[in-house]
Length: 472
Image (tube, rainbow, N blue to C red):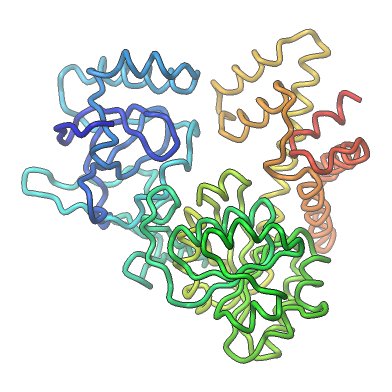
């Protein structure tokens, strides 16, 4: 987009990264949001979403002048809802320059929020900073005028806020792969496991300037990253011994244990001061065992499983749930900024594993319900596409819902999150409930459907392939 002359209050089309131009309004940012260095940019709140971001001026176009052009090239229902929201705003504004009220929706939730946390726009006397809207109080935990309890700077680009729950959230400053402005740590980083999630993480670490040594059980997967500047480690032990902080992301509890305790494993490279961060989704007992053996050798341990999928990993938009060594959590700040849009510190080892299993239990159960609804629509003579359109107009509307339904309608089950892994997580979540005598009947029912899908050879397809369990 070409550079234009813009000012506070203008309606615009804003473009960020690979996402299409979206209608929004230039507004004052909340206090304590710093304006990013470098090229001129404006703080934009987007219609039809809960999102807001700093957008470079060359990525902005005036709304009215380019409305017809944008409508021609963007035909999606969500896009049309956003345009409708602009027109409704204009009708209600009646010529007055008033604050933008954005209808709550999760249309592109999370897509553009990451790049703007912790920036501050210095206001002029003619442009007083207004109070942040309620959304900032739950997304930019440490950036609003009234943080939950307190916050402290841990780097120039990172702030931490402790909520009343005792958890801590790090909001990445300009930290996603979209704009590439993370200040990398000078520590040597190791990474073990280059699967769907690990590959995107390593790519973003490299893009942000980190020094990374990689290892993977299938060595050929390392080649691409070597070309991008990574170093090759021959064994997990070698990676740990030559790096300051080593991350690992593998498939399940057995793989996590084998990686640490097996021949030439992580434990053999641990010595006092070495740091190990396990990003695998496993049970609390497994991660506690690994923490104990790492610490017994003088190492430091952090668990940091991630919520997201392959696309979010590639985009540097993961959510990181961490627990364990608080100092190590802070040492990982630039890495977490590179790979994710936010991270939470949840206290003692085991808490992140439990929380991650609960999150994936909810996601997996929801996916099974989506598949069940689509098949019920089909067998009762209802249009599956119409069902999706209705859901997308209601409170359940989300990127996840739309993407997974589109997978089913198109018969495209290329993995973004392996079905076998969501079933594993459901199984572990059910076991977590059993351990505390808490019923999980919904998760148990969903688990049986995924097991049926696995029996139909869907393990290596996307989780949305659970649909096939209902049609066979």
